[in-house]
Amino acid sequence: MSGHHKHGRSAEHDEQAADAMFEPAGWDERYAGQERFWSGEPNPQLVATAGALSPGTALDVGCGEGGDVVWLAGQGWRVTGADFSAEGLARAARHAEQAGVTDRVDWWRVDARTFDAGDRSHDLVTSHYLHAPDGGMVEVTRRLAAAVAPGGLLLVVGHAPSHEFTQLSESHRKAMFLAAELLPGLPDDFEPVVVEQRTRTLNRDTGPVEAEDSVLLARRAER
Image (cartoon, rainbow, N blue to C red):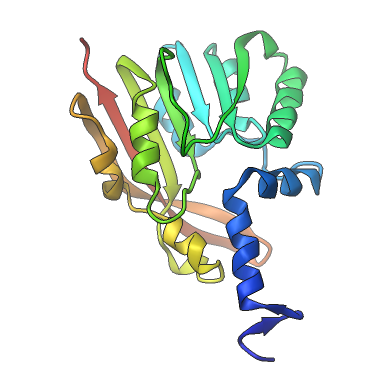
């Protein structure tokens, strides 16, 4: 089998399909394809960070099916779940209803690459496994930071480059990042608290494998 063709599809077609995952339509199609795409469990780095915090207001950007939103609301937070996929937000709303937390959640359809927090501010702004193409996560981090209230926290978690992801497209590999690479996106009034890679176990069909999460946690100064 040629290295340029897999199952009758060209490498260029594969790359185009991968690039679609950076756009709303690609995720709408993906969410429409199966009953539940993600586990529904909260992301471990969020639990580690927010588990000991007093509940306040939170914004989860790239919330997908709403696992983190539902968990935060269950902890007493007032949460806005933001995503660019209408299908993802619809699923998230159903999961929030099933969990009985609809009175503590709001939904916002917005693209993390272009959104403007405006006069909205939150005690915790979080984003997990949101990957913008071509190094775009620095700008996304800058936009996320603008939504953090004085004294609040910003938590950005993503996939670190790893041999576990060699099967992904070139555009996906380029979208991965190390935590330190996001530091230029922090405004001057932010102090980094955690800038590191943390090992996480992924459950694959072939068994558990270890991968690394890039974790950036920063606090905005009180005014």
